[in-house]
Image (cartoon, rainbow, N blue to C red; front, side, top):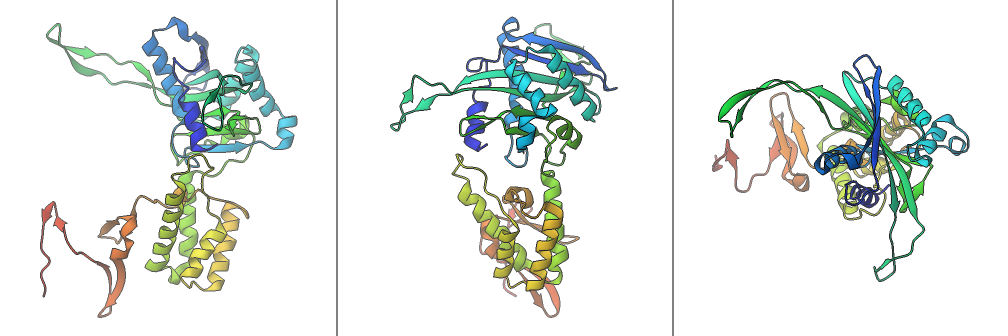
Length: 377
């Protein structure tokens, strides 16, 4: 799914626009036991509470594509005949009204989840009459494109701490007692995907709150499909491969070139939210190395390690392996952060046999918030 398609669905998740009338789910205790299941008709709760419920579910459509939002692809065989895909289709086709299917989903999810403490599994169904537009951008009234989908959110339930409060009207202090509150989702998904503004039952959109986690057991049991490794792990492995294979040729110029080139790729893509995210491959990085005259044998070793760790034809989200918003240089005692657009201000140099990081400082130099002058020796 593209950013534009995700945003279109996100805008629907509120009381005024969506057709979500009921949210069902179950409550799981710290011993992984389903204590209760429920089906809440939103029409019976105050509007502000209904909006809060939908806002929690809506969180599963937030974050960065490739980092927090990950495409799950089912094989042809899974779509034709598999328990996991059949269950998801039944939940969707029954509009979450099949109790047996819902209970089976809860049980499967609970067996697969290793979450500390109590949590809720929430499910919602929506039916979207997808509008069509003429070439002059005028909305057409008649359309037969109805997108039906389910949303799932797994939310921790945590206990608040007692606190002292002041009641203005009564003009007195009061203790607020402990209570249990629903947190934002740790993970969730939408099925099917909304590709080309229509249902794609070959894909689901998977959500994780923390880019360092993946909940492999959950994705294995619910989707039984390959899921990319967590974004933080991708970055660690990518950096380790460069460091180990390029070795002594991994100098400032190499890392500057890799960062600059990836920064430019992301910047070029950013305005095009209606297209799939830009990706990089081993061939992309190989080209960067060649620009820096990295020896061919080390480039070949990088390719070999890339295939071994990510897969032969693997493509990575550039934002997962390089932080395009900052460029940081560290020594054991000094840390320097540089505007990614001004890497030309920094270089490394050996002076009188000593290694230095040299920063060109033309004006507006501050130390602890105080402007200083740089004097000639």
